Length: 95
Image 1 (spheres, rainbow, N blue to C red):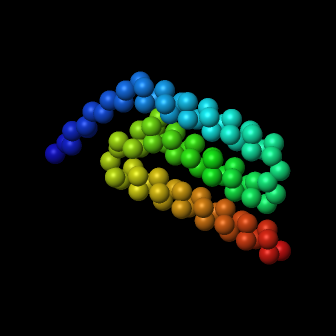
Image 2: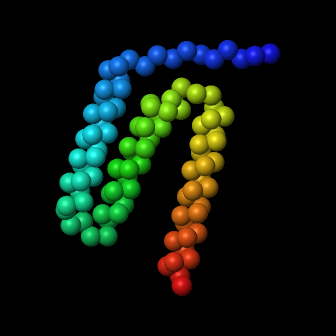
Image 3: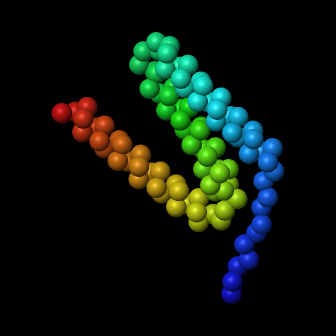
């Protein structure tokens, strides 16, 4: 039994708004890099990068409109990546 793929059409205006958001967030990233924020600079940059990557994955890679299994695969990949980062940071900080 073959499951029929649902067609989803995204208006060009949505792509344009996402593109404008990505450009704006890039400008914000460059601006924040020029401001002395101390220890929170890294966290601000990572938060902006997270928002940008969420927009790209959701709209340009169409994960927002795909089946649940693809979202689960993405979540597993992100948890694995976060685990690698945490374990590496733990190793570096506690040497």
